[in-house]
Image (cartoon, rainbow, N blue to C red):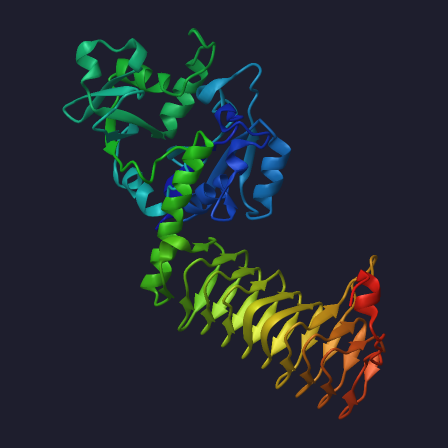
Length: 434
């Protein structure tokens, strides 16, 4: 695909008041990434010239996108003097001969859905879709495969209200149309805004070629509210999980599973119901059992759960993690931790068994400290390992021990328990009865 054929302009300047949020609309996330990220990602597959028009919270929007992409042109809209979608185009200078204008609140767009704009030749290409119930949408009058005009519902007559073809809000223009008509836009309307749709009417008056492009509603669905955000999340999640299942991942009750866009699977993997897998997680030849949470971690040749939690920077290889085990910023190689344990800021080597109730006490209230556990260590139940501590190979730690020394030497049995003390008849004395 020749990416020099088309420039893309993404309109991302609006506040999005219907989201009822202090956050810019385009920064609301779907499957772990901001809406605008998904649109830029799709755009980069077909174009090497992408401009994003920003205004509301422009610094935050630009900064967040630059954390993902390093070759995007950001243009600040003068929203005070040139408000509206047409005003957003005032300072944009596309490089290529065809210019595709996208909205920053359409996160479900992908490269294949945009292919029709590349394959259609016209001065103006206008996206439309057909609705059984077009209520609330601007109607598009089409005659002989030419767009005649767009009419808003409030301005439509009875005949026009019967039109089921509506404006999907995406346009492709020749560069010549952009350069000629954008300077001619005015704000002589009730909202005192500059409208991109006016380019269509101006092009029609000059008898230019204006073709409709029928698109599906799913890919071009706009997000204007938290409800729209939720609906789009469902669609995006279905896409993500369907793609991985087609690649060989087994998912049990996939509708109950949440997997973010950045997660990767390799080889034979199983994900059971109720799991949440997020961030830059890699899962290879592993089994993630029911209701487990995995964040920004690597899991290879291992099984996790049910009801386990891998927090960021956990690295598991050839390891069994059972129910109610939490791992954070730790590397486990060839380890068994069957149940009810916390392993934080730790390195645990192969052949080691972590007994139920084991805790690495890694935080002293100010700093985090490291726990290093060698090979073939057996840690009895209800043990506390107070970091910093190193436990060398072939050590046995008796159940109920609290270890506060810096090092446990190789091959020893470590026991740390208080001597049992009993007070005769204390119960009866305390409650005053016998």
